[in-house]
Image (tube, rainbow, N blue to C red; front, top):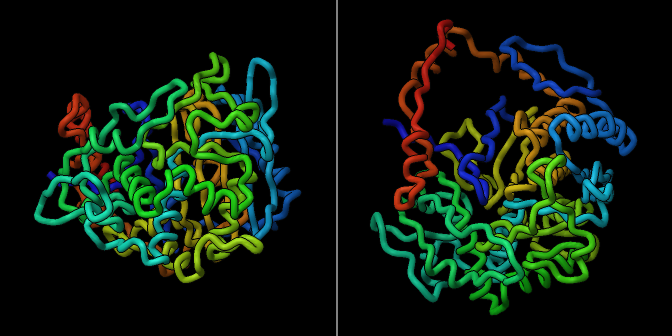
Length: 448
């Protein structure tokens, strides 16, 4: 049986909702329909100029329809370009029953695993200060031990690209209440089995990211939340953002409700127990500050969160299973399409669903977050992003990039077989889901 080495984004709370793996595309208006893919070369569409007025007209014609169609209460969006905030706007409601509108500048959303980018930025800050060796055994920095396996240690580089080899864990990831999680206790009592040799198999791990956050705590001598606030949030003037749980009293009035569906009841504030993996609360305009800093190699105005060479390293490709496919930078996903090199990250709690994309060469960043799971019949964020790309960065592969039907059929045959998701639950009651996750890949009648 072949092992599928795809990156599966485990949602924090429910095994039935797996994050999306972007379809590979050639390397580098108003619609509610997913666009069919065609093997024929399409005539290029003229790019629209990326201006605030055009973006607003485009999103105003699309997002309200998404919210109504999918039973989503609200969304918040920010677009940055050339070191400045180009556009930010809230859509729908932060409190659906009270009809409280979403504000891009004041309403906090939960971007879920997009939070990981802050954890990785913190790791890279300590790396550039000479306080962390990304290739060292992670046990060097811990007050407990990740057990030996496969004759090789786990390193921070492997953690950043989800190849530490850990099985998946769901137990105790999400809670509710007014008690702040104890990160060290969680990590020491929830150590996953190591089921893959390190550095070989991408298998998404919230535990591993939380472990990196704990390393930040121990090496810096500061609680993780305080470190992020002092070294990232405050320098970037992200004054409506925090990793703290529960929220500081000053931010509570701005917090959006989360919903399964807008037509249902508001849900309690989610407590992410391994919080470096996903506990951020933030506004769209604050997230714009973070995007601008990364697009400018670590600098925003007079503030610098990374040295230029460190930021460039962080954005560079670190791991991939094939030279022709997307892989990982230092914590960022590669998601290149439409002829653009793009890095980013998606994020999900049970109720909030978000994406952050950075177009490094174009100096463009895009952030979107929805406060409801909705009907789940499509992915609003994926559709929105792809339509954005096609409007402002249309792309037609060069003629030489076309593959013959015979070659396509041969390629399809070469990857046929049985596959298994790399996100496995070997030592938990969810092991049955791993077995159910086996599937067959084979060519259809026309050989494609």
